[in-house]
Image (tube, rainbow, N blue to C red):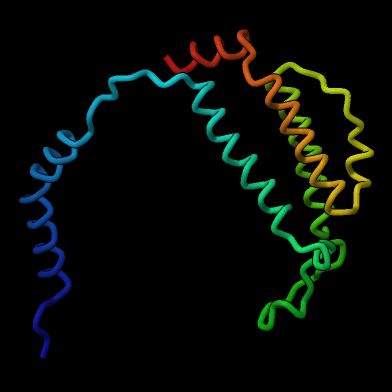
Length: 158
């Protein structure tokens, strides 16, 4: 015995949507308040980047020294098939991220820090990599505000 056909369910759901849509729209427009304070894009970006800085440093600090050379392998994934040849180990990922941070931050800030990227890529120990990461965040802290770039950001977001 068939209680409701697909057509009946479709019509009922369409009716409910049509009947309640104006109320939902009114609630949404009332709750979507206009911001009263203009947020500086440079400050907003700085908060996001600072949070990522802390997370990245915490990640390096949390990795135990005896497992610092970790790389995923097929034994970790019971039902997965895949090739793990050439997969980067944790130190390689960390140094790659530090190198990329220098590259992108230099482009964004206009600063050219005196850092040898090739040397960063060769770091292996947890202490060396953590020091390199903290070194980058020290450089980033020095060049947080570039008035020329910040003004261009403000013009884009107006």
